[in-house]
Length: 181
Image (cartoon, rainbow, N blue to C red; front, side, top):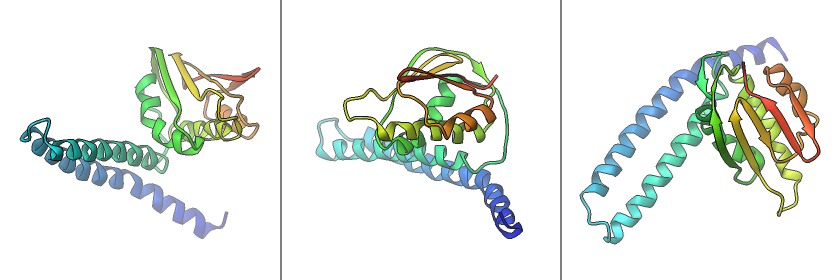
């Protein structure tokens, strides 16, 4: 990577937090106004149904943008609930997988994922879904800190997961890893 490319990357990373703040403000206003209008309409009104779909779309877009913008932020390692962490990164994991993944939460625990490295490593894991047959399960199961993917991790994902503090073990058709300490 050239010095100019490195500087461009640092500038982009510097914009990630303010960009996320601006997106949050935009969606807060959008969602609040849609909710207020929806609350003023009778539930059976056709416009209320349309507004409900728009509101759902706005919430999904907000979650996707938050998840994507998280990838460009500077490194941090704050404590977070493991289920909240996975729910926050799930929208971009779905994009990487090419199809929606199912997240099953049996139990959650406090974790300290090295972000955004952990998010990016999980993207590499999710890309393993692309080669699966259509009938294969696409499930992530969380049990506290233990995450099990219902597919084998691609070879390229293993060093990324290890570097993010989440060494993975492929056992048959599953991948198991422990989320950040």
